Length: 131
Image (cartoon, rainbow, N blue to C red):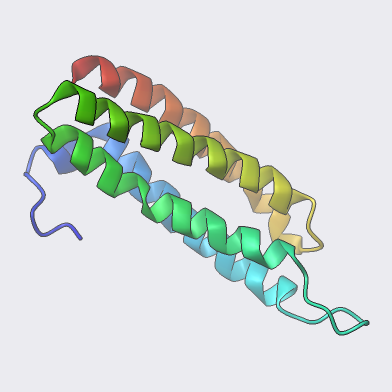
C-alpha cells in the first residue's frame, strides 16, 4: 500500500493520524468481535458485529484518499477525494456511536476513537488549506 509514497507525504500529520486511526480501529474491532461473535440465545447473531468491520473498512480507506488527493493534479478530482475523505470520517464517527450501544466491554474504547477522529478532522481542515 505504501510502496509509491513520496517521502514527504509520510511526514504529513494528517497521513500519520490516518494510520493511527486505522490501527486503533483494527484493535477495537478485534476486541469487540470476541464479545459480539457469540450467537444470542435465540440462535441469531449480533448485528453490531457488522459495524465493527465497517470501522476497519472505512479507516483503511483514509490513507488511499489522502494519497489520491495529494497526487491529483486537477482540482475537481482532488475535491472528489477530499469529499470522500470527509464522508469516510463522518461514517467512522457515526459507526463508533452505533458500536457504543453494543453489548461489549470494548465499547469503552470508542470515545478514544472519536477523540482521535476529532483530531483528524482538525488536521484534515488544515491540510486541505495547503492543497
